[in-house]
Length: 488
Image (cartoon, rainbow, N blue to C red; front, side):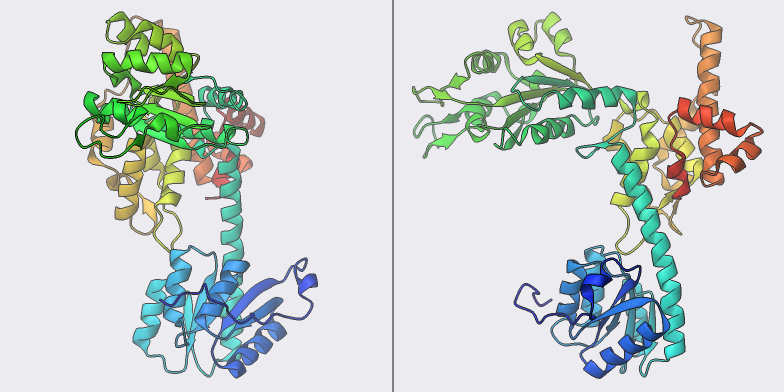
């Protein structure tokens, strides 16, 4: 596809562009290499509909216009110089530009039109264009685009309300983590992050780094301590001088030097060998080190974040981790809860991943209530990473844009089906367990009822046999946001 980065002709605009910015009119872009066709479509549409029409005379110019400003509808000829209409549609889909595409062609065969619609075009028109049909289908597309834009805005608002530096959660325990991270912005305290595999330890490290970046502009450098043998780990962390060992043909800076002024993230820090633990302790104490084979002390200004999926304190008790190094790392401790202990985040995360893995040019898959029940009931031993993989698979196999139970991995459904209906723990009081069981069922019931009624409190109250006030109180108690269901 030809590059669009070169100097391009200016896209023609309506008069009164300044007034247009505050006008309620929707914008339409017409792309056609025939100026007469552009003018004809522009006049037809502006005469019949409350729209403002811009024109472009080739696909490259049209793409530049679509990137520069939002349009509700694109009407493009299929055969144009530089970038064809078909290539333009492909670019719109690849870039996920929120615009409804129509194609027009004077040469067009049915095969071309079908191909264009498979690529994501909404409809096609043959030349000469029938003005009445054109206005009808554009008006319909504008209504649908308005609804899509509203849904997108609501979803973004919902996600934004429960996000912190790309981390999504509405769990009270995670909110406490976010607040703790917020206190780390202007200091260099060492941080220890403990959590099961897949709970997002590296994302926490990135959030800490990002929140500190205004005062600490250095890079974030990541080292997986478990992936490197002891013979390489020292050189990887501290670097080496030329000739320090066989194959050391040049001087090499280590990760500590690379992270100077920024953050060094030591993943799986509990797997560092005992001999390296001594050297790491010295760096944390003195903030200086020597390269392998060198004698010159190098001073560094680095925030160190250690992460582990095991308890370092238990490793200390077993004699597998130095106690003094543990206390040096454990200045600020962050414990990440597993996904099974923050089940309120499962719908939020599942729908985020459904948007992430949406097919190009298509809306994100919706999750059927029965499928969501399985997601909520599963224990997720692999945590968020496992949930993401499950939703990615479901998006690939889903039909008609809905994730059903049979789209989920077998282990999710089988594990839930194999569980006893009610887990009985005779070491705990019966009233306490009954309260938990009732609360769990009540929350799931409310979510199902809100999904069925699209977040309408009155209809949800009628469906459940409760008062509006009771429904409102219970939604507040379970921290359920009704606006999420309105967007579905």
